[in-house]
Image (cartoon, rainbow, N blue to C red; front, top):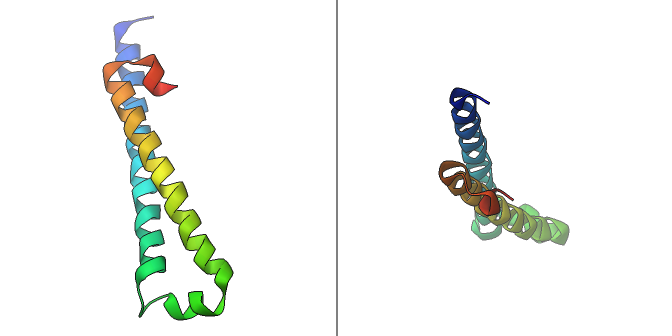
Length: 85
């Protein structure tokens, strides 16, 4: 396998993991906004307790995706198989 192909795959994996990290960060931001903002979604969340649980679910999924994306970025740059797995 030529070195150019391996380098391209490395940077594609890095870019993909940056996108996963960014998506996780956005989910965390929306989850915090829904859970905390008293003037925004709090009126809707107060009437439906399922939405409050949804906010915490967004937080959990967002944190997991952010961590996964960060470890994937580190693994792609260092070519570390354990970090990528």
